[in-house]
Image (cartoon, rainbow, N blue to C red; front, top):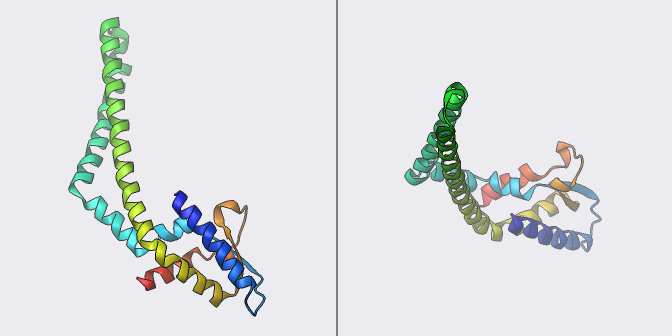
Length: 173
């Protein structure tokens, strides 16, 4: 994520400086969500689809869902019968739930790490293409300033160039 933010900052500064020194005085201010632009590309979507179809990833996701069901069943059991259990049985039951929660958190972290790895590969692959595509968009639309969309309180859809950048990135591949 920091790669995207740094890339956006560098491109914005470069593009703004280049535009400011050009013959025309562009005064159009727009917003751009670079992360959304990269994630919205066909490459990112295909990469995530491939990950979703991966047998190992699917097995991890199934395990995660199974752990959720097991935890829920144990919690329901405790709610239903817990009043009649001995202290030892209650402690054992809590311990089982804690172990399942730890397994759940580990499985969830593994899934997130896999997704993050795919997204980083996409970002690295698109990084060299983004700058020239963005500079061409700045030139074509006579943009004077690009502001990070996450830093803006409000911007109309007319001022958001994220979708335009996605479209151009998809065409450039």
